[in-house]
Image (cartoon, rainbow, N blue to C red; front, side, top):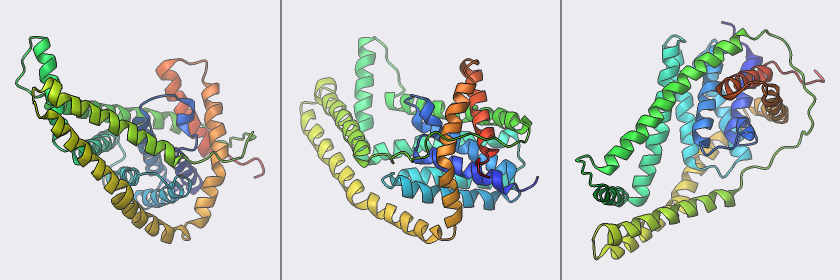
Length: 335
């Protein structure tokens, strides 16, 4: 398989657009499952880079560095965890595609493992911030619900919810792998030919707001703490539950404060320092990728409108395939 540099460069730009939140594929959706969709699109694009590249390991790692540098530039307040997730997807994908044949089972493994990593990362963060008391509170709520339903189970509510949560993510990862396989087959069947579109607006969208992200974190923290504080005195029968609730509130607040003011910025600074050293090496690639953003946003919107005659899953599948195919075969009108 020939190493098609132009296609790989455009797939890298599309991946950077998706990760940077500048109006990529999510621009046409309104969904609460942003993380799952962004992660699914990322492994789709990583798989396509591997499909077109001769040296899969080198191509994916180069694309990863370019994506992270662009992410740092246009979305500087992205949390450290976001860099970890993207890097894990790329490195694990590069390992799989460089060691094993390009088959459907490889895509399924990539989807399942990367989705489970995302789920486990969230569970780990919850445990670090709120401690085991979070799971104790969930067990208390579960026991209260069971008592009202006259139903007793030896399995704790926490074990049931965590197992169900990981099962859902694992199944979604498997389905994502199968979906990616079908998409690549559609894209591979598309005839090679230049795709042109006149851009209506070449201005860049503003990067995600730091204030918006922090406001979301504060609301999630307040709601979680409220639920935990109420669990112990009102549902757990613990007369000193309110003291435990105050302790949990102070503990989680201090941990979040330490993370967002000390540890997080420190780790992020290390990542940005490393990426800054690499920036000059890929300066031209980064510039070319960002120049494609306004065109790609319009191509994605065009592809969504172009599939309006289709419905449901069929429309979604062909929209994704057409968007990527049009992007990788796109030529700037002046070329």
